[in-house]
Image 1 (tube, rainbow, N blue to C red):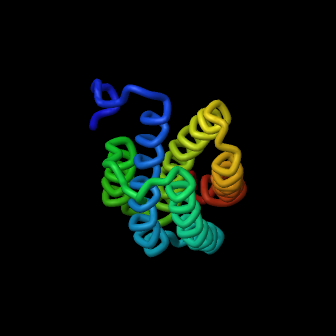
Image 2: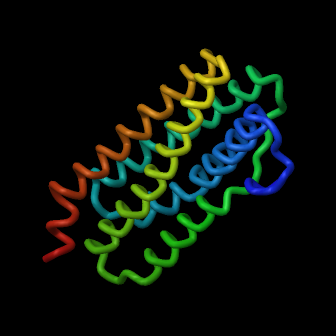
Length: 168
């Protein structure tokens, strides 16, 4: 089922599709974060990435609760957007030879992921509110707040340390 095919005929169907999309995305992020942790050299960046990996595992668990609340089996649908963001991050990380510059590239990649997640969860919250799914709103709001905090933490690490070192 593609997002712009005629397979989706209701708001509930669209909502479920995007929940399946973010479920896939979170699983791919969970796979990508350990690679980023391994490549990072800045201590604060490594800690932030490790912390977000633990949060991502909780977010996947929350999504599974959402599926239960919707009376659905937890199922992922391929998300080309997150696949592209992660692929780009891998390619850029493979091209950067200087470790200080690599940390800056890793932060940029991690923030691209965070921004994608922030848009998805914001949309899902608005739709869940419209559909009267208050319990789902609470779960997604918790996750959205974590994503925003992770993004803010990455910005702080970049602005206070990593970008300055990368610039030489």
